[in-house]
Image (cartoon, rainbow, N blue to C red; front, top):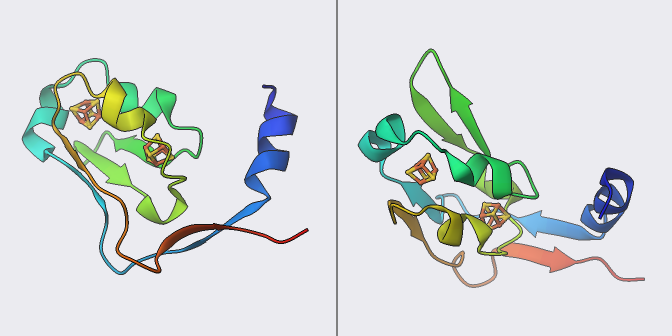
Length: 94
Ligand code: SF4
Ligand code: SF4
C-alpha cells in the first residue's frame, strides 16, 4: 500500500481516546532496545523515540488497534490491551 492510499484509509477512522494509555512500554527495556521495531511497524506513527529524554513517546490516541507493535516487540516489553469500552477507534460513516 502506498502512502497516498494509506492516508486515504486513515482518513476513514476516527478515535475517541481514553484518558490513559492502553499501550505501556517498559521504559528501561526501551532504552536498551536496539531495534525499536515498534516505531517502524506502526502504520499510525504512534511511537517516536525522544533522544534527549531517552524515552519512547507513545501517542496512544492515534492507535488503530492493529496489534502489530505487540508482535514486533520481540522482547515482549510492551503491555498491550484494547482501550476501555467506548474508547478507541471507530469508523466514519459513508
Ligand atoms: S520494540 Fe519494545 S522494547 Fe523496543 S522500543 Fe519498542 S516497546 Fe520498547
Ligand atoms: S496497535 Fe497498531 S496502530 Fe496501535 S500502536 Fe500498535 S502498531 Fe500502532
